[in-house]
Every structure is written in C-alpha cells, then in structure tokens.
Image (tube, rainbow, N blue to C red; front, side, top):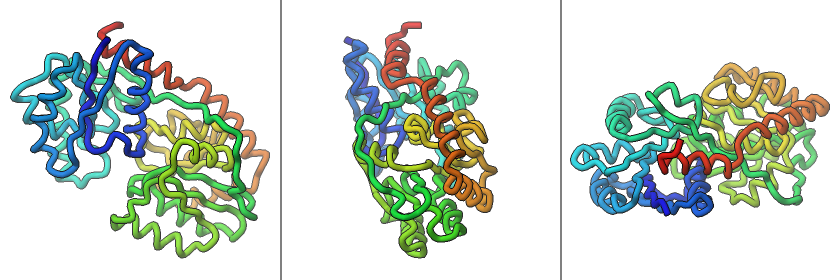
Length: 335
C-alpha cells in the first residue's frame, strides 16, 4: 500500500474547497491502494514547526505539500528534501488574499519549493500554465443525495444561494449591494459559509445584512447534508468571486441544476458560458450583477432553461472517484 503524508496548514476539517479536495482524496485512498494521512502546521508561527512536520512526514512513501503550506516549508526543504516530494496546488504562487509585500515574498518561497518537487499537481487548467510540466487533477463532484427541500423564497419571487466563506475575494459585499438595488420581494439571498465574524470584513458584511431586513438569510457554516438542502431548494446560485482556482461550490450548484451568476474571472468562464448555464459579468459591475439577479429571479422559463443546461454541463465534470483514480496514479508514478 502506498503511504502518503499531506502537509497542510491548520485543521484539515476547515470548510474550503481546497481542504474538501484533500478530505475526499483521503476518504478514497483505500479504494486506490493507498493511505493518506495529514500533518498540519499550526497557523501560529508555522515556520517554526516546519522541520518537525517534515521529519515526521518523511516516513511516508510520498510527501505531498499543500500550496498553502509550501512557503513555510521552504527553509527546511532546502536543508533536507524528502526522497519523493510532490506539490498539490490550489492557488497561484503568493496566494490570493495577501497584501503585495507578503505576496511577493511568499511567491518566491512557493516557487522555491515547487522547483524541488518531483511533480506538481494543480486543481485546474487555470493554474497549469504557471508551472512547467504540471498535471491537472480537477476536484470531483458529489451528486447531492436526499429529497428534503425548504422554502427559501419565503414570499419572494426567487431564492439565490451563495456558498462561500466571508473573505474580500469572494465578493459578498458586492452581492449585497446588487441585491439592495432590487425592489423588495424580488429576491431573497441565502449566505452559507464561515462568517469570519472576528475579522473586519466579516463585521462589514454583518452590518450590511442588517440594512436588508428580511431579504438576507445567514446560515453560517453548513455540513454536507445542510448544503444539499440549500442546493435543492434554491432557484439560482451567485458567487461574485474575484478568483476561484476551480470553483467547487459552482460545480456543485450546476450539478444541482442551478443557473450560476458570477464575475468573468478565475475559473468561472471555464465552467459557465454566458447565456447558457448562467450569466457571466464584467468584474466589479454592480449594476450588471443586480440586473442578472433580477433577470433570473423574475424570468422562470429562462431560469429553468439555464438550470437544465448547467446540470447537463455538470455531467461532463469528473466525479470524485474519477479524480481520485487520476490523483493516486500520479502519486504512484503510473502514467
């Protein structure tokens, strides 16, 4: 059995697309003749713990480095590189949400690590061009099992779902501004994800939701079953994110038959064709975002047409089982 140790940052149970990717791969390891365990750098002073974590991970056949941990391991990999080192990359070098000085430093440390890896696996074709010889293993899709639904409209013409942690990159404030421009009773917006209430951005979003009484519903972090109910119950999905390496929540929404609205940035244009599976908008155009929300909220035939096209498009995306087969073939050195 192939043994793999994946070095990441923080709790592997964290609710993000990248962590979900790793958890699903770990769950499917045995089906592919492997065992994947996690070794986590603590978020506090991660550089300090890199040597210890690398030393423990080196007992595995493959040491797999998560892109959010790569920079913190650079000094220790320079001293002693594991015999078989592979990177799994979910973000461009330097990260996504950092200020320019940190991004500059981190990008150089990230690239230092990637150049010393036997292989770099990226989560989307969007990232492949940034690395020589990278291989793409997309996230998979889980068909949302179950039949339970909920009345998310609650008197409105339609219900829009946004699944995202509250980070500036995700565009939650822009979504609320666009929804605020609609007449009352047109759309009810449902937000699911880590509200990060301890951050300045999270507090700004909370204050903005209070300006829209009865028009925004906060669900907070949701488990798979709860998210499944939201997908089955919503009329449309909206995520005005500035950057999605892949867009796991978008793919899940499409699989549930929801038309998608979002910015023309990141990987969204690779998943959604404007006017077919949803509406793709110039980034930052709040007026256009509001117009797209109104269009799908008030035009049910259009909404159903795009939702059916989204579900059909989702059938061409890999399942988690297919992604895992490719993932473990690469780790095992099989073509």
